[in-house]
Image 1 (cartoon, rainbow, N blue to C red):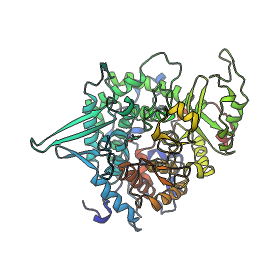
Image 2: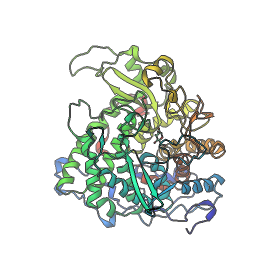
Image 3: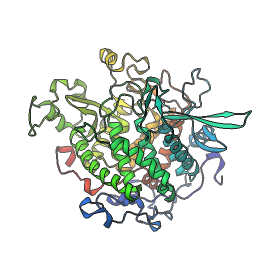
Image 4: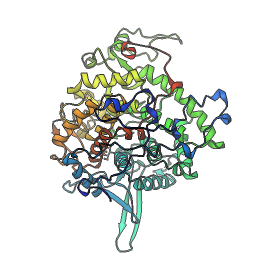
Length: 554
Ligand code: GLC
């Protein structure tokens, strides 16, 4: 460590370039001195635009070029150490380091929560794939990529295990929800146990794990400029196995990915079965990241073609049918039903009477969002934070949609941010609906946990979305709120209540992703070039052909 010890920060220059930012100049948006950014072509600039199938893949330059590394000489913010870091930053680094998990002497991840006061450990002493993402980003941003590499390789090995639930064999590509390192002090051995859903409460499937793994592999590559890891046959195969699971043909009539309930961060029954926005946004992002990293060998090529077709269909479907704003809500409200044939306007036969009352009040004149789920006769109008932020970062949202999502944050600050950023979803489900939808889940009572609770971890995603859309002041406001409580309250996992004022009923303390999420948010605001690790620029080939409503165009 060559850094100011007390802050836990390494004094490193940022190695991620921001080639995605052709459309706008971030440095103008932040009130700091301009950075000199040397633009270099990076490996993930390969896009659909360059890869039009009609041109024939063999003619296209898809190989990695060492000269096209992600801007290793991009300078870090010159103002990096020019102001006093918030005292919480040092505490956060200390806690993050305390959560490190080692396997045979090497750090391989961080445990979910370091909460000794809690009587029930359950699986919070494990390394969760999704929970490790903000930790990984914090380490990458701090110039410590080794732990991320170790984690990627360790989880890749776990993917190779034969996985069963009772007598049922799981898909080869499945990635674990979590793993645990068992130390035997006598024999001096370390072993790993992993959970692919076979031990998880409710036996839920961690659909998001594989997507996060791919997204993290790209973040690592982008941040370090080290293309060799993603290029290894093992990583290429790992990616292909994950993709096989989600690109396989079935009976589907939609390009979205069909999932069971509890398949993501919301890992309990919460009525997100079907086509949840969180999974669709992560799916889209993982497809785009894979496109940048797959080699064009015989096997890779076939996947690239399938990905490109799916991306076209998926972006059209999501941008058309999941998007809602004032105009669109009004159109649905006036929908005719029982339309047959391809000329139908109300394609999914949504009955206007099924629109919940709250959404008419919630919808501002300016602003919009991707709704929770769309399937036959069903629109889940709930707003979900992760899906909407990832839609912005992956450019699933068009620039107009991305700024409409940010407009919504501003217009509905009380509801979505309140006193602790930010709500996992809005609104909560209550009474009879809660009984039916959650199966009377006592952990998910209204405005608690997954049911309208406030999750500090989401701060990093909000901050990244704010920077990408040029609205850093929104992130600053949110971070200030977090700083007034998080450390004092012992980094809770979630907060309860309509405004997120109360530490969650069963929230763990010293929840690692609350800590890491805060650090990532701080580091990105300080040096916005970090955004490149976790953001993809708009792909011209995926531009929408349809214009639907006012907030798209204004
Ligand atoms: C809870 C959360 C899940 C998280 C896990 C570990 O189960 O719902 O998203 O990964 O805790 O923190």
